[in-house]
Length: 168
Image (cartoon, rainbow, N blue to C red; front, side, top):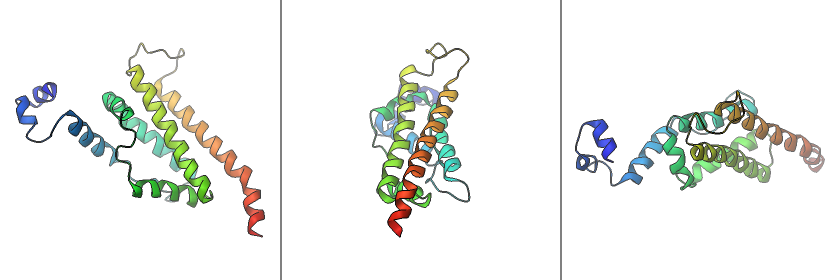
C-alpha cells in the first residue's frame, strides 16, 4: 500500500480513504481488468476462434499485471457469478455441445487458462525463468489453448454420431 501511495504521491492513509485494504485494492483491479473480457459469445465466428481469443485475452490481461495472477491463484472463485457461468455454458451449447458436455467444456477451458496463469505467477514472469530455448510465455499459452480446442473438437466430433442417433 505504501508503494501505491508513493506512486500516487499521496500518504498511505490517503489510499485507505478509497479502499479497505490490499485485498480490496486487488479485487478492484481484477474487476476492472476482467470487465474488458466480457462474456464469451460466438458473434459470427467459429467457436474455436471465439474461445481462442477469449482465453488468450484473459492471459494477456493478467500477464500485464504479474502480481494479480498470483493473487487469483489464492482466490479461484473471484468474480465467478451465476451469470458468467451460464454464459460460458451457453457458449458451448451454441457451439453444438450437449448440456452436460457444455458444462465440462467450459470448466476444462477455464481450468487450463487458470493453470497457465498459476505457472506464470509461480515463475514470476522472470526472463531467467526456465523455458525451452527460443520459447516465450506466449508460445506456451497459444500452444496450450490450441491443445484445449483440439481436445474439445475431438470430443465434440466423437460424440456427434451418438447425439445424432439419439435424435432419431
